[in-house]
Length: 142
Image (cartoon, rainbow, N blue to C red; front, side):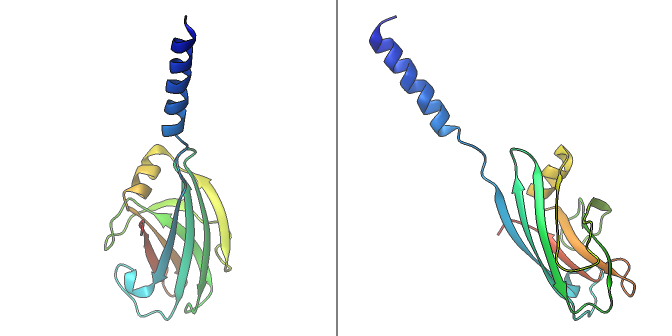
């Protein structure tokens, strides 16, 4: 093989690697409130969730912070698949969510990853007064 062909092959290979770079992690901030629950409620509680998702590894990481609930949080979860305005079952538990902040991570299944990127997961925080969820926020890219 000539030096020219080797050089061209090397350049082509380098270009392929340059343009197929790593998948970029997605960062989202979700606002949670009672008005977003289904059905809506008048809770004075508010919350935010900073969510990072790495599509290459399907790793979902979060930091959930909330305050002003009607009572202590009993649990929190990612639910889905459901669009805003609809309810669904638990997709991913948020351990340690009985105190704020709650941080953690999970590796998603292919179906959960598709629901996340399709805007079909939401986070809610449950209390004794609102066992179905006191505050909620849809996980969507902004």
